[in-house]
Image 1 (cartoon, helix red, strand yellow):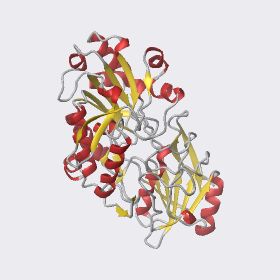
Image 2 (cartoon, rainbow, N blue to C red):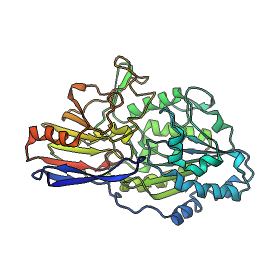
Image 3 (cartoon, one colour):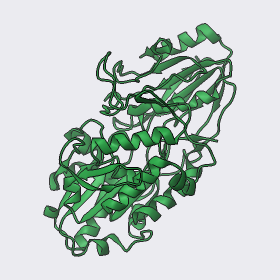
Length: 426
């Protein structure tokens, strides 16, 4: 196996590049996002972005006279290096005369599993944990009603968040299966919302992205993500779930947003800070070019690497569009030592137990076999798929190649997507 592809792995466990061997005779097309190799922002660039906000005074001016501060941050399913950003936020708060005792951090984990102290340290740094309380979000209790959206969803938000008169959020924007783009108001709904509001918003998303609703549950067409025609305008005006998120965010009143774009290794390469809507809109406008990857066609094999969202690797199934119409094999690389994220809305909690949303992920029609490769097997967490007979779980790369060669020998047309979890295809 004299040739190989080099792919980023393990965003929260010592990020590194790993070589994956391939047969020499395979014809390989690598489809990177446009911004895959953009350099990480320097500290000076991060500081400049935070201190030159869009549509807002400087954070120190927004913070003056406030008494209680919450800093929301995204969880381990997102690669945002929050620890690099927080010091500049804290400097602004100190300049406004806000003491440490008035500040707390809350992870906007929605209905994902709770983070541990180890996770908090990776996200925020030990210095933050030594100075400030850091809390998980409980989507089942202690949420305050803030209003009803035009879609009829009763929005309840974490009560600790609502008790603060200065609300700051740090996250990143990526293409998103249900709401076209994440980031922005998603830090609030679903980030720190009640499970009932999260449920209702996800249902809107399944209807808004061309998914089919079957019975009481939504069956997501996982091979559909975004097309090149999406723009900031269409995102805010045509996707019901995104519209509702923005409505909810206005009800809550987020005071300052820090939204990031990341490269293929999860480093922030662009940052938009300031008022929620103009900052997020500007971020999405750049994201539409930054995350664009060329769409390969007529391939025997697709290799979809999940890095930024390795613990939500099912997102990579969108790459099935690159297989031949007659069908082929999709290899999903999902190296997540923590396993697939615990998700109380769409996760599986037993062989005979579904989930609250009733969601199943169809193996896309053109996929003969879905080969899920992980050095950290998670038989319960990967899925749930609606046709497990076409799913093969392997934890040895040589075995992956052996299985593929049994079908294709040394002659195969292959597409490799190094950032299958954060791209959209054009």
